[in-house]
Length: 218
Image (tube, rainbow, N blue to C red; front, top):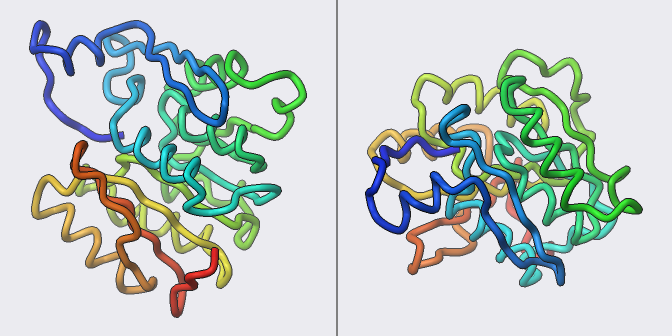
């Protein structure tokens, strides 16, 4: 998730981040997520990039029904939950420290019949790849995961490992700094990358990446 400084008492945005709960409506469902800024920081709050990508998926930006999806850096789990509600089989991943909160949100917000379609697993970029066979996933999703330059090599390695010839990567992010452009340049080495959506109200971009030529009929 993104690393952005927020201070106590810093207005509406800060109050939202420090709130213990965040509520949304997607896929004809009410979603109420537990947040824990004080204990887990940026990994335990909902960022705009996740909300924008959820809206893009709900609007039919892609068809997730019965597709195999993996989310990287899931944080509170909003994106993975919405992908499951939209019909996907989803592997929702983050580092070990975030898994308890992530699992609790997933279980609390999916009806019992859909819970088997969402699996929470630990994934530290570049380190746990043997637990994720290449070519398994149709879509790789990430919301606000491009922010720490020291993780770029590991993130790119993870995307290359997970992405088969047919898989689609969707990354939702703000472009805040030159280092964000640097990652996009890195991504354009092994992948064809283009912007598919921009939310001007939240200043969030969605990029689609694929090996070879991008396909426009997804």
